[in-house]
Length: 262
Ligand SMILES: Nc1ncnc2c1ncn2[C@@H]1O[C@H](COP(=O)(O)OP(=O)(O)OP(=O)(O)O)[C@@H](O)[C@H]1O
Ligand SMILES: [Mg+2]
Image (cartoon, rainbow, N blue to C red):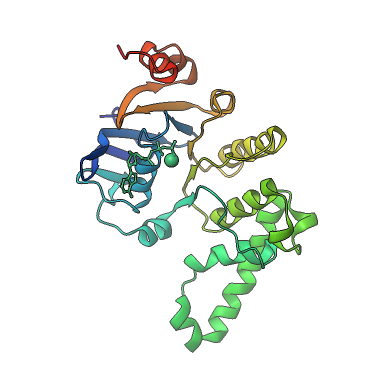
């Protein structure tokens, strides 16, 4: 177990095991994300970090273990149902539509929330239009939050990588998530772009009160912004605690230096 769950626990994985044939991607992995936390998941390449995130968001189905969201067992729910409940995520790489503007991309994020849905939307155009107006106002709020005002009408394909990733984040925020899962959001970014994104992630925790689960390889960033760190190696949790606690842990040091594990 990752610890005793309490009222403030938002997302919890309990003893997840996931196999792909002979590969044991996760071995009884537990994780607990509380309100107000930036929770980093770190570990060497192939350790199982993305697999864990995919089990949380429902893209992978573990053979054993359970996932709870706000105390509700969601282990059986498909990804879109989990997204509708409030589990938002950004993916590795770029997810934006390159021929659309920043605002259009953010607006596209609202469609997962639309009450009317696509087929219903064809029948009830008035209801859709009302929702669109509400979403346009909310998109503008996200544009302000992410400081994208100057670029709102620019085509995303022409933007620098770091800005495109910010638009990506805007799309995820459009879901009004109760928790946000991010898989290596800073990969491929310049130091300046990483700094900007780190600031927005802190603002998401502080200003929007959305806890964040973050896979990140840049240890400087992880140590600077995380409240909790879970370290995974060969599909197992080898340490969990504050950044200071895990960075002093001999098993963590050994895993990162590639030496023998204690
Ligand atoms: N869909 C899949 N099919 C088969 N094997 C998979 C699949 N997804 C992950 N794996 C395997 O599971 C193990 C864990 O992979 P995972 O992608 O979770 O690692 P990771 O910690 O995210 O690594 P990285 O830092 O390189 O992104 C690896 O051995 C990987 O090859
Ligand atoms: Mg990965």
